[in-house]
Image (cartoon, rainbow, N blue to C red; front, side, top):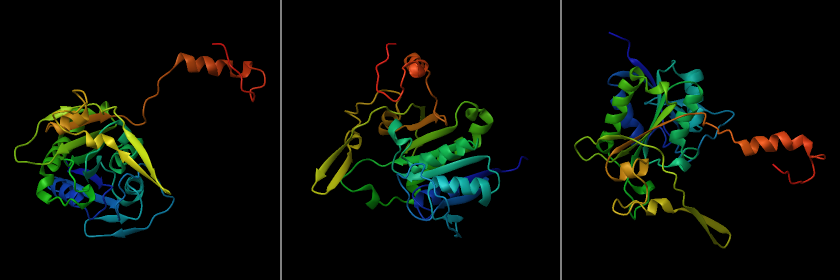
Length: 273
């Protein structure tokens, strides 16, 4: 019998969240799980990094007074054994679309692991939009059943199947569990972006209007996107890479070649390319 997998588990909702406990309990049934998670809620902190953090041992694992990226670096370099895979989540609330890839602390933990060349999975659960703020919605351990089921399945099978030969990490978004398992759809992040801002005196309120358009009947996102899959009740799995790829562009190359040919490069001059 092969040795059990070594898993580093983190999140951005904090070490005391229901989502990380649900994932821990499911993964610990067949793997060695080391928890290194933020001591407090660090949602939407992106890949923010600290120079120095305090750490405490808690019942579930290590609580780091820092960000999810801090937790991954501390866990991989110091606190835990060398893991076979890093798992981030389960986040309360979906992480959908290209624009959240640099904003979400959950996804950023997976990206940080990918830079260490360690495969990673970020798991989030879509909570249907309502008049109640997400922060005030309490989810039970049982409501994370779909998230724990699919994450466990991919942890058990994706490494041997060679999934991470082609992806740095997987961004998983899961509908709330309602009994029968949901099907998996391999998706791409939606490109839609609809942020705006409104000033009220000395304050400016930022508003993400994308979440106002999550009605399955009128959803504008195309087939194959993460948002459409989740809203229609399927599990979205987006295979992604880190670092993000770059595109060679002839027009930019021409500008670079002409840079020193413009005379005084400190002057603003037009270049005929």
